[in-house]
Image (cartoon, rainbow, N blue to C red):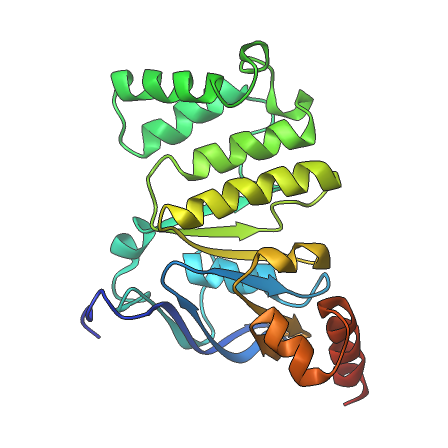
Length: 250
């Protein structure tokens, strides 16, 4: 498939996407889209298949069946061009823990092709985001909220159009989570498209749409407020619990 019109509303299209590990199906022929400029919340309990799906979109895991199309380009044919459009942040694996915040930024800026002057500017930018005395601390010694800010900063170095955030608020206190989402919402206002996985249901209010994944299957999809009305429940949390219980009975 050749690249299509870049003005297509759907910047990511996932079609019959499947991932099998031996006899175990981690992701079971799922279909969904991410619209240009939106925040899509990808919800589900641990082991639902969220991270596996993210890794197939990025190209870190081989697709068993189905396809991913990013901005009109099929991932199997335009991997390099797609990679330039994507920024990835995982709370657990985004940074090298024994390197300092400065060294992490220098490394990721270097592999993104930035020169010395540009890297120096990035360090200056970082010093306006976190305290200067923390820049040279190893990442594993940083508080979770500061580590989170550094991870988000490094994921933005290549100036991606699309951010894929995998459990970015895991292990962070509620206040830090709110601050982080304010940063995410600012990025949306700048025109970024954001796909974020989480199991923290209090974060749903920030998403334009949600997809609930359970046991590798999509069981609910839509706008949060609309889904609450449609299912006659009082909150997304209740919707989530009822949907998971219903799926487990089937």
